[in-house]
Image (cartoon, rainbow, N blue to C red; front, side):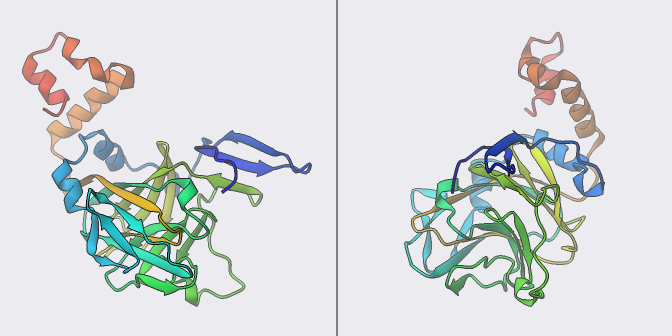
Length: 278
């Protein structure tokens, strides 16, 4: 995998010496505007353990070369099968609302083709050889974590056309070195798929997803790799109640440093509980 620099961009200068600079930079345009609803969702308490299990990997919807671990239902393990690419889908297919989940995939276990994304129930779950299976046809959309490329209907893409780079602000000589975890953001109301890394919103990766039922999916080639999914939370498409919006404004005014000291504020206990989602 080479040197791992979490949350950074690696570029090579003319002397062949790697130089590093922070990934955070000013990003403009509609694709880089972090949706307000996403901030609201991330400020909410995380999904319960029961909800995470409901949105976990589906042991009945997988390649035969992977299995969901008995002692950790949020994690699958891939058998060391040569010349095989294997997928697993999540249990829940989403048609509406905003949904966010985290994927934990150790960088040293990704190998040559590690792809994260979403797919319909018709997308294939196994292929002979090593390939970016997620995004190979019209039924799936995926981000190749090693090549920093986006794939959709790849088998029908003209040979002369290269897959789009993601994040799209990367220069030709740059590569985005991911940490072990990333966040997937599926907005079925807007029909978009986006990603976050280390708290930075990387922009819209795919559009045009409205009207489908899409499941979390990954495709893997590394023997004994283990990939976990943790559902963060979801929001229905209906407007949020005014009380929820007021709580969000109050928590923003407190800031990250003071948000954990709400109990010390000179406020009625009922209001303190409300601010802490209790």
